[in-house]
Image (tube, rainbow over all chains, first blue to last red; front, side, top):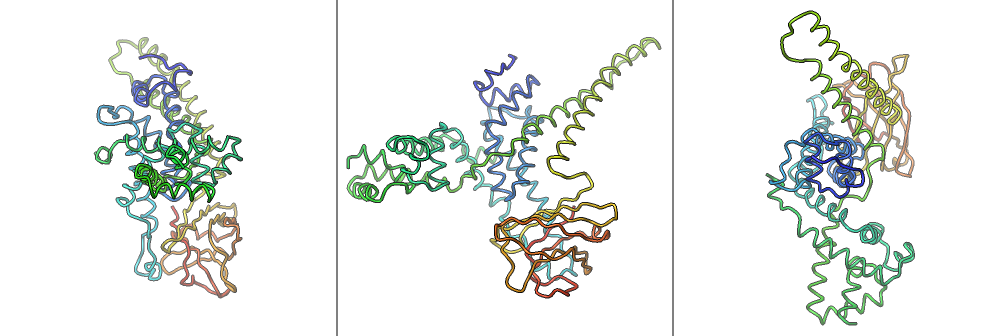
Length: 202
Length: 245
């Protein structure tokens, strides 16, 4: 196995980095590179699933430690690293969800008024399919060129008009328009090329 | 407007970012052009998918270092265990001494390194989160559907035995006129009030409360809205609840 030189880490595919983790070669550099690529998605989806930033931070830690500990179980012939990581994230989030639910639901007969209250969060199965779409759109956004991601974030999340984006970024209005349309096209292509739900459920 | 111009502006149109005059021109073109209508539908599907996107936020910057430190500590710990249990029979005391030294020396070094790493991680956790192993952390979640308020309570045991409660609440509305919030420890039909408080309209509130030592044996925490100062048990308006770990 080749050694990962710092300038080469970015050139390695996710699957090659997983080979290094499994082969116990340069594990720190490999895990660090995977973290840089995926931590925003794991954290963002974690916040959506668990509704709590501190629980999502714990989830990020557990997910990447699991990636390291279970790297030998990853088989690139069965699906992409992204899909495998999504399953790891979803399963660990479900564990965290169950622990939280256990804390919410213990009710004795004496606590009659407490028994009237309930945890109304969606069930684990309900959140799985939504979370897969969240994961896919997050990955498609993360894989956009930074200049394209910027216009989408400013337009979609901050609600800026095309002219306001032009003023904010100092980029010509025509360029902003082109980038916005191209960004949406690339998102469309990115989503079309993602792994399907069957693969996720496997 | 020509198709090329419309396609250029269609992204901004779908995201609602065009000036009204330009948006009207695009809209007019779309009524006449099936090709651009198809493009519009494809963009609208993406716009819809964006609703499912998680919030574009970075995890805290210290998280990566914590993960890598934990990984290194675990690696050292496991390699130390492997080295401490060599297999095979030894033929003499001299060989035994030699072999023991051969494995003990690096193992002592590894244990020292692990201890140092664990200490560094523990210090990081201590200074980063301002907690210690004896601090109980309670997640408080809303009892009503569709509410988005939440909180965290930390119980800090004091030398006196009392529990100091550091309570952080987010998105909880100000109490109604003549009411206030109250924190309770609950065990069966026994209740201990940790004190009353109100919240600021900014959405995030931090308060310090105090509870007697026995509160540590009560396993449920409630935040209620109260109207009577002399209440000895919680009212029915339970806003948040949590379980003491």
